[in-house]
Length: 402
Image (cartoon, rainbow, N blue to C red):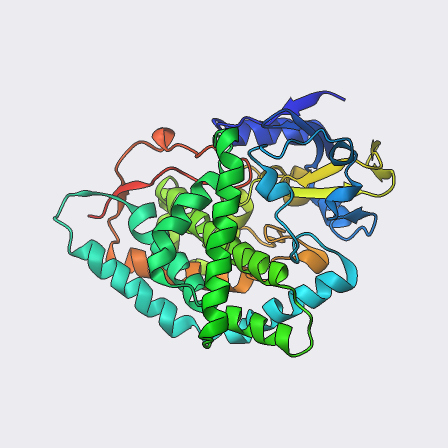
């Protein structure tokens, strides 16, 4: 099996995803830092593996980890071993940790956040409207970032004063270019910041999910301090990064497909279609780390060996022709059905999917209603991916608002 090295600079994600698909449903890959693992790259096999009990999230199953081959200063260590949370446990422990979060993020409860999301969106658009006419704007920094960060912070009870430090630390946390000597301190700083937030909420509880987690731990649900801190970090990280990329990628897709932009702006096609097709075609999460095989597992004609690590390559399987037909590589907001699994599948599906869809569903139509003549300020070929192998994220999105 030919090993495919994932580009730490993410210079050609589409090309890399095509090579992964061509390697078959199970591809052997090398992560930045020289770490070997496998990737599932086809839709059907990904659905099957995401519900396979022989794949677990306990890093101690990983042979390379047991042998001491994974250094603690590996740039992706925080994603491979993020501490005890619903992201790293299975079975009863997973259900215990996930239940409280899932209850707070049901579709019905998320819908109650709509008015607040609309108000934050309007405030952001008002700030953009106040800029001098003709000025180029980084839509990611000025619009796509503040909305989900403010929403998830309000949900979790995080003070806006912590946002600059969170942004700085998460930039290092996700990047493959963080110098190895800075990784341990970055991880320690993230842990210290979230511990401070939890301690503050313990002293001054509010109507937020962090306070609810603390209260649950004191009322018999047995959440440890580590589990509360790591759950908070997980929700903040996933709760804003994915939505930022969804909004940015949707705008970039519409701006490079003007006929389809006309269809949605005229009301011919609903915004929901734009969101779902963006999730499939240019998914916010390119690869999800990591699960571990407790037994040999057949995947197509290949075998994922016992003790090996598996990543789910959503960027590759989102354009799988076996699932979406010969037009899988095309952006098409009229695609139906569109049964992608960009938010995962099975018991570990992302509990924040409804919130991300709601935020994008509010932000995108409001943006184009305010600025229907919005245009990219640079050629699409000049849009650059950040060096993050897990997130399909641009450095910026320069636009002219019109």
